[in-house]
Image (spheres, rainbow over the protein chains, first blue to last red):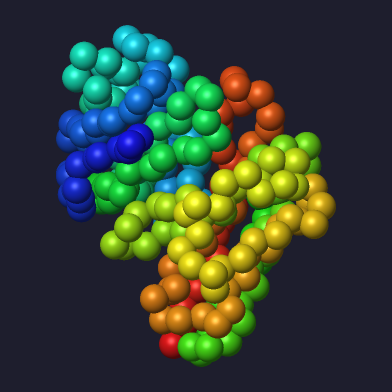
Length: 112
Length: 115
């Protein structure tokens, strides 16, 4: 079936550290891939997306590249801030399907 | 736009009671989704509607759960009778029609605690 597996948390980093959160997917077709972020007490918000292989999504210093050969969409940021503390969800959606599949989420805590 | 509005924000109830969660999607959005978030299972899709019609309810855990969308601006998720294992955060999300409109807009969620 179609699913997303992401790195288990929690992840704790110091400010200005480099961040990687791994995400791999299984899909029967050609999905669009997403990263959503959930700040404390809020709903999920779209962070970035990529709709085809080799696309790079980017936003707020975060980046993720759609790698078809490794079925991955790892999230990276070169220098994290305390305000990046949140739960990050990798997700996929097949182009002919309205079902968005989310990973389990990875909690990131950034300490000053 | 006010975004997706969910109510109540928090609900505490006793086992066996009926619980009704409410959602107002963004005006003009054709799709409405109900998700449940737990520590054990992460974010699960329960059901979604297109133009007020339930399209896929395969994620609804059991017959105790039901969802309705009587009009384009309102949806409910009902649990009757509620059980402690239903404790979770329930999110409603909406999006416009069209293949390129893939972004989901989430409400702030309802934190449900069943004692």
